[in-house]
Image (cartoon, rainbow, N blue to C red; front, side, top):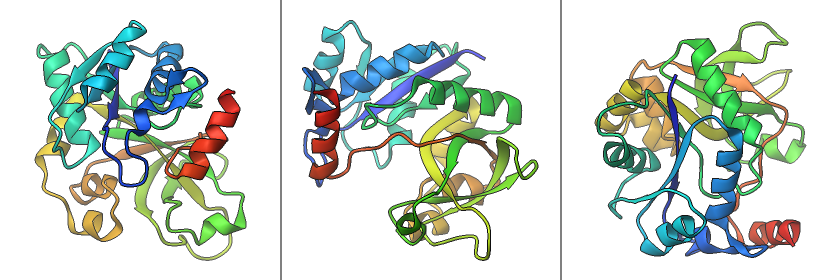
Length: 243
């Protein structure tokens, strides 16, 4: 495999406008994420953005950034445009999508999702970890991955569904989906060509478009999730971490 790691970073945000440029211990958030992706050693890393200030922040530390259209309906569409600019000849056969708001991302998770794609032989791969907090079970903001594990204690499995509901029912663990993806290049091309699917629109979960279209998603089980930043309180907590 010849992976490229792409980090979509949009300036606009309903709750936290300019979030990628939020200062975290002297560096913008997007630079902290870029540093983590680079530390993984998995492959080339670039930021795909709609804002020249974000691109400039990345380039100031020696990173690679590409400007994309501001009106993409999803991060996957932004990735696809960036890929055409950065790699028109198709040298990179795997695309890894790392979200731009995970500045404490363990670099090992990038390796894990790449390995899951390779081992699973699937169109896509992603990650999940077991839920341990009772409040998360019924929280619709905590997306659950319903996975057919290769065996009960396996670290690899196949995604059956993703939902904001508490599922599956009955006794047993639930798994929190971690929004890091690896795509085979042809799978990403197909994915962005598909219209939004009914279940995707109902659950507001983009990955359901792939499942409804019959695409396969491998899931690697990891021990913990990196905290994302969606609220001012979460941003304050991360700032304390970096200070």
